Amino acid sequence: MRLIKTPQDITTLNSASLFPSLLPHIQNHFNQLRDEICDPGDRLFVLGRYGYIVILEAGDNLYDLECVGLNREDCGLLGSMPEYVETLQLGDMTVYSIVVMYTNDFIMTFFMNPMGDKCCSTVGATHHSG
Image 1 (tube, rainbow, N blue to C red):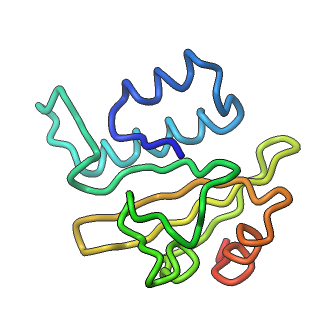
Image 2 (image 1 turned 30 degrees about the horizontal axis):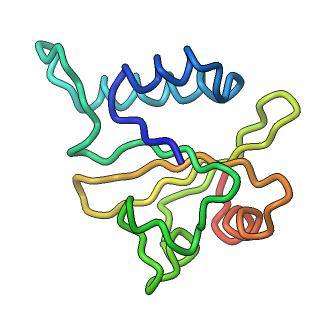
């Protein structure tokens, strides 16, 4: 699992060559959030207090994402009620973008590749809207 709260987080992932086909989309999403939320004079924008971007990786337990507020008792991401799920076709890779609203002021965006993961496919099929 990778958490993105600052522009530096994206730079770090880019420097490590992680998620090369997904990073441009995440960068655009981050910029869109910054433009919508940030005051023009704010030089240091951090997503932390508004919700942030989470990249789920193979092996992450979708039923227990306590570190991002989705606990096992409520079935984690699979028990959440996403605002929407979007399927992104990035070359030969399919990625789900899942937006979960915790409060009116705190929204998390999860990105995950469902390839070979029945749980991931279940999330996409159950909540897909785009």
